[in-house]
Structures are given as C-alpha cells and as structure tokens.
Image 1 (cartoon, rainbow, N blue to C red):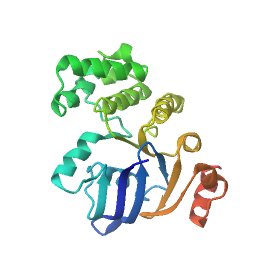
Image 2: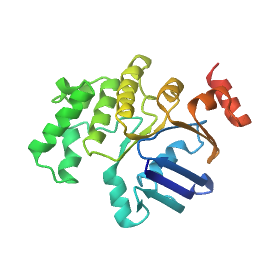
Image 3: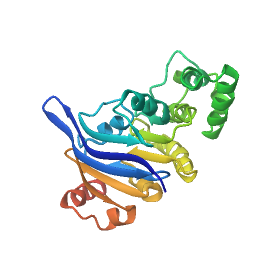
Image 4: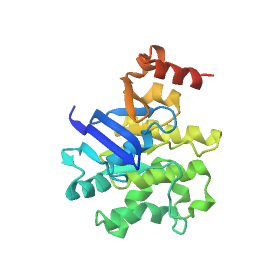
Length: 243
C-alpha cells in the first residue's frame, strides 16, 4: 500500500481557540477511516484542512506526495480531493446534470459531451440517473446527497472526504446514502468520513480515529475501538452513544 495522506504536527487556530493540536496521521491508499468524537473536537476542521477549505497554521499535510500548503499543492488538493458536505452544497439554479458537469469542464477541461456522459454514469451509479434534468429542490434530501456524491466522483478524485454526510437527513434517507458510500468503499476508494453512524464505522472502516478537544485520542480497528476502547474519554463517548 502506498501512502496517500500524511499529516505531521498539524495545528489550526480560530482566534484563541486551538481547534487542531499537533495532529499526526497517515492514511494509506484505499484505506477507509472513520473520524468520530464529540461536537467541537475538530473532526470537520481536520478534513477541511486536507483539501485546503481551511488552511492549517503550522505543520505539514502531504496528499499523494504534494505538500498542499504550497500553491501548486493547494490546486492539487482542490482537484484531487473530493468533498461531500452535510448540507449538499448543490447549486440550486442548475439541474442535477449541470451541477455534476461544471467542475469537470472548468477544472479538467472536458468537453460538454464527455462531462455529461461521465456525470450520467455516476448519477446512474448512485441510483439517481432518471432525475438528471431536475433541479435540486425537486429531490429529497437523500437524493440530493447522492447527487453531491456523484458530483464529487465526476472529478475522479484520489480521495473522498465526507463531513457528516447523513446528519442533515431524515432517518429513513440515511440508509440510501450509506449504501452508496459502502459501495465506494468496496471499490477501493480512499475515504475519510466524519460521522456518527457507528454501524457504518463497524462495517466499513479499516480504522476508527477518535478525537476530543482538538487531539487524536485513540486510533484502532473498529472491533477493538467498539469492544475495548483504551481511553476513558472514548469509553465515555461510546457509553453515551449507546444509550
């Protein structure tokens, strides 16, 4: 396995709030990492730093050999690291298809025909191909999130980041989004997912990373993490979730 992502002594502050404190983490190509922890522990900031949505203050982040704090690396991260947000972030005035073709045409230089063929393929894959010409507002939340996943895939990213992709969804729509993510995992996509869906973590993750107060407290295989967490903080967190 080759190293896809390396974080070394990564720090990030918002004013006086030290949101990421000396983060060290390595992710191998094809690895599935679930990042969990209480609200405000730095989980979302961590993955936002990996694609430069939130530039880190100090330390090093390398994605596939590129230091992303350099301008060239920053462009690389935007191009090669896909991101799926909590609230879909689709363009409301564009059709589903146009939401998916915009970046491949602008950033990768694909022709409209090539971009549309690519987009239709991914929309079919997330079981939403029949809705290609609708606007996002005509779709359910679960459908919109599947469009957001297809849109990210249209850039053929090396890595996919998910920032609580199911937390804005009604409970009955959560399953359809997790099913798509499980399919991606089986295909060997490198994935970092911030989520509270612990069943998904058990089934799909190679490793669970538990964060608290801006630090990585514990990293373990799912079985170990759920059955025998090492830190008191992780034990307390899991006890709360299981109630």
